[in-house]
Image 1 (cartoon, protein in one colour):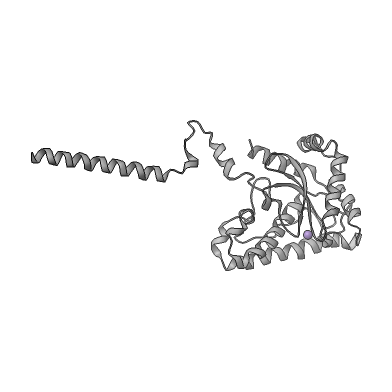
Image 2 (cartoon, protein in one colour):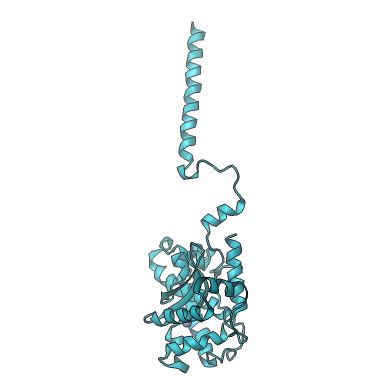
Amino acid sequence: MIIKFLRQQFVLFVTGIFLVSVLVACQRTPIAESPTPTVTPATEQTLSTTQFPPVAYPDRELSASPAELPELPYAYNALEKAIDAETMKLHHDRHHATYVENLNEALQKYPELQNRSVEAMLRDLNSLPEDIRETVRNNGGGHLNHTIFWQIMSSNGGREPTGEIAQQINQTFGSFDAFRKQFNQEGEDRFGSGWVWLVRNAQNQLQIVNTANQDSPIMEGLYPIMGNDVWEHAYYLRYQNRRAEYLNNWWNVVNWSEINRRVQAVSQQQG
Ligand code: MN3
């Protein structure tokens, strides 16, 4: 009798443990993750979380530990076909250098943020402490935008695009001329200071957009393929207020081989 009672108690106890385990297991599995696909390629999961990896360079993001001013990949006078040497010197050595200094100064207060890339911070500004959010937006953005800008220009630039970018531009905009016209117009339409960009959007399409101040397209989930700086500091010495003329001449120094590297990097990431 006692043994039968103890056995019943034992069965109840074991059943209880089992039910509690099931409940705990159910709670630990978020609904979105189930059912687990039986065959998931390793890359697929990476893509869903990081849609457009490296942005500053085709193969790597920008370090913030500390942020460093990259050297110009050419002499100050290399881009004379569009931009004079004095403008290049001021633009790189003063303007870009100041963005880097201001970013590092802001991050000194929050050493843990220095482990994140500049891109990671810009993609998720709301996760940053409020007192440095605007500073990171403006100066982290400025550092990132100018780092891309120097690379996508060259003294050997200026011819019509070749390779994958040429093909994609023709597919999307009809012709290189139509693309250039639309890009210039978007640059002119940016009121005040900002940038005009060719980006890849989340639907994997090319798109021309402009951004205000030093905002980066990555803040909107877009991957910057190429961009032109339409702040007055980028052109005022030679062109004064003639932004349209600067936009037009700028095509003489566009580095299509670097732009192709950026296009290929993102198409590889997207599989
Ligand atoms: Mn600038």
